[in-house]
Image 1 (cartoon, rainbow, N blue to C red):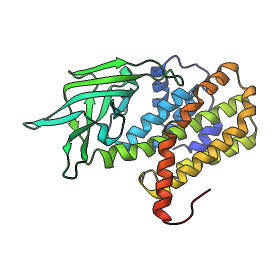
Image 2: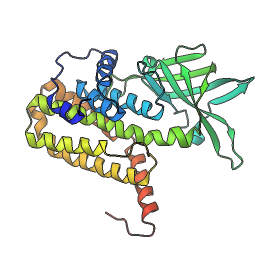
Image 3: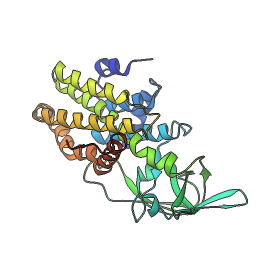
Image 4: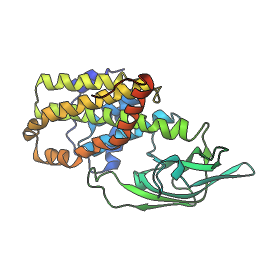
Length: 309
């Protein structure tokens, strides 16, 4: 099996532009056949992308597969949690009910990444309130083409407009229920898993850009150092306080590196440069939530200590 670090330095740069997300997914699947670990597939998929949005596609898909390894390898999958009240567990009103051993979903998800491209949906739903009043969630898997699934495209986002989003309405939809708690085993860890894999894919894309533009060996060394740091995170323990703290440090290092590389973007072709300026905010998605996780992790490992930076 290839070393992904060697791959980043020696793999020929794909010259064929990607016409759409479907083409990006096809190229991603080629990379997936060369690596075993989802994080390495995300890195290689990002390297093969010709823009940051398609690198996001690679990272997002490998994040979902890290969360649920048994998903079909060849299908685009969307995790559907967000509703009208947001993505917090208490805001989830989609219901999962059982009748004679068959499970059904009813509700609306207001923001599903990939929109109509997704062939399978991972849907978070409520099974009622617990004794303490908390909303009890389960994770389910649904065929996006099943009876009762209605997908409505949403307007393009200001960045990475190539990645569609949609509202998904579920009306008495047959569902496969996954084991475990929907929040603790799926929704909560996915936030960290997604951060790791999307960052990994974005770094793969940045290495591609650095090679294509002929940036110095020093820049490539620094990019590969951050890639190695992301790969070194304990992805099997996404709720770990140490993982949250280390990931916070990696994001800070990436931000510093990107600031230092700002002047080099003048050396890339104009289309790539314009896309980078447009899509760069993608790396800041969920930054506030990430900062909250980081602060909580520090408080739990160093209670009472002065943690001002």
